[in-house]
Image (tube, rainbow, N blue to C red):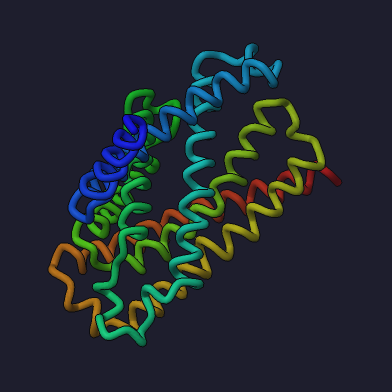
Length: 266
């Protein structure tokens, strides 16, 4: 009976407080930060046991190794959620009574909160180890992304467009794998070449073509977008634009890198 009582109290605490609508943003951020810490520690432990080359890395390389594991797990999580909410769920359907721009759910808000927790951790690490984990472009990218995601999470507006942009995280695992292959001394391997080709097409679809569709969608639904407050409109219109410019710059580097790799192979 005592165990049943404790179980009922735990369920009540979970439903009435931790997962109550008013607490979801804060609970999800804590979950995101905690998950990042767990992935970092597990990656360190797993790598020490199963990857002999891990012990030969410098301290900074081990930090980046673990950090990239965090970004990979986050990318997989948020990509799956984003694809489901944008293309499979009817949450942001135009056929609902409420305007698409104002639609949100407990799941969509929770997932955004987890993503905010990740951006807090990753941005903190980038600044702490600056510039070893990335230059100013990464600081800008993470900061504006975190602000936009946090706004949609807290206000509950414009979430569809945030999720459309977050689909671009689908390229992150491939980019991280490329770093792992390079660090492991496999730059001349077939896997490295295949990885470069996959990154090229994934980047083209998720960070170039998808962003073109994003702006087209905003154009078609601008009558709804203009109903956001001024800060919301600025975020929806400017953050994706800045990210698009950065994506094009990085895409050009990807093209040059792939051409260089193919030239070496021949």
